[in-house]
Image (cartoon, rainbow, N blue to C red; front, side, top):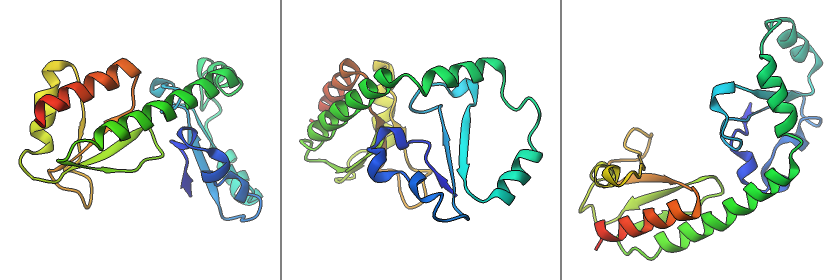
Length: 180
């Protein structure tokens, strides 16, 4: 199983596994709308598999009403709105490049390259924890993800989401105050 929930934030012609589904009948690719289309409440997703036996078993065990009419209607609109998809992808790339470039200027941070809608950062000096950075940003209405609970990471890792240009600039300006 390959989870492609974040795939729309990348170049799908390079990173998606969907073209392999017909070649490997044991490959199951799942996608959802909650991340790229910002629709976590509708719980809409889909899967691709070429194994007819597994597909039949899955379909025979689905609830008759496994998605509601609103999710169905939204899905039909979302997946066909190519202008939205292209604009969102272009903005994401531009803002991701901006954030990676600006965050890389901080001598105290190690920035990990990203193809997604967030960037992983490590505080190299260990002079402040990610939790402390997060607590300093919250009053400024900025939230970062403290990654201490992620396997292999510790209290000096945090993740920032790529947002609107003005929000990304606000993040950088406030991090400048913290990492003087």
